[in-house]
Image (cartoon, rainbow, N blue to C red; front, top):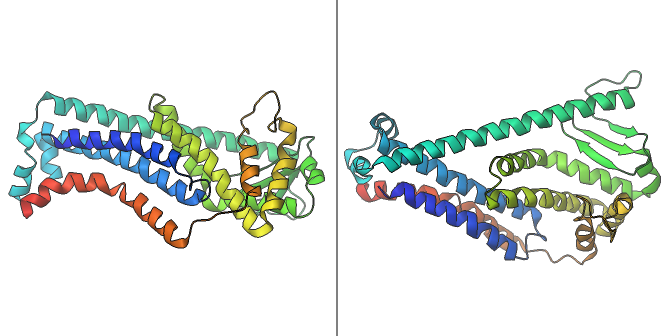
Amino acid sequence: MILPAALLLLGVLTAVMGPRLLARADWPDREPVVALWAWQCVIAAVLLCCALSMTFSAAAAWRAVGGHVFATAPRAVVEAYALGTAGLWAQTTAVALACGGLWSAAMLVREVVRARGRRRARRAELRVRAPLLPGERPGSDRLVVLEGERPDAWWLPGTPPRLVVTTAALRRLKGRQLDAVLAHERGHAQARHDWLLHCSSALAGGFPQVPVFAAFRDEMHRLVELAADDMASRRFGRLTTALALVELNEHRGVFGGPCPTPQAHVPARVRRLLTPPNRLTAGHRLRLTAVASLVPVLPVLVAFVPGLRALG
């Protein structure tokens, strides 16, 4: 039975070609929201290829599984998939892919548990450093101001999400620059970017030898920042948002300092905001979104081709 092998081959091709095509394109930086969707479609296609290959391998290896998978299918469809021709490799493939799926789920659970632990610790710190004011309810959505010598602002996910800014940031940010920074952080909260970061980190941490998952994690961290920058710039202007980024990050050594930091992508974000925008047209965005949406459909079509031929 060649269908599971074909699905695995399709998954490998998608994992190799998808990131390369996105890396060579010049539109992801201009349209980070579309790029986020395209990356999710690529990863979904890779995972779907593995899941379908596991299902058909298990159906070919064990009669009980095949009976459940093809319980309502006509006899001609079952015969088209040639379930009885599989050998030992089908069992091996099914078990290996099932273990991979369980490992992925375990990595996601571990990432979520760790993130919740970090979130609880930071919320406990906030309660100590910024206690509730008299008459303020615990569930209120408020801006938390912390005493601090380093200018910083961040969004803390949760119910409700918290926007935190340090007193140093309040002193450095001028007028609408503070509004732009807060709009940037609210953009993260509204789009629930934390879930994208959790999923990408779980896959990259669980399969460190798979380049597509590492690229997915890195691009998610970069693109969510670009998307939040665009949300802020639409309300307060690109120049204001760029100046706010400079004020918040120049002390980190990211603008030509000798020791690069994890915020080394900030200069590129500032240059992007200062460059006149060359947005895609609505038609181009629609076509790119449609093409990206078709990527996960390909493994489904490959999986159903024998059945459709039998019914035809």
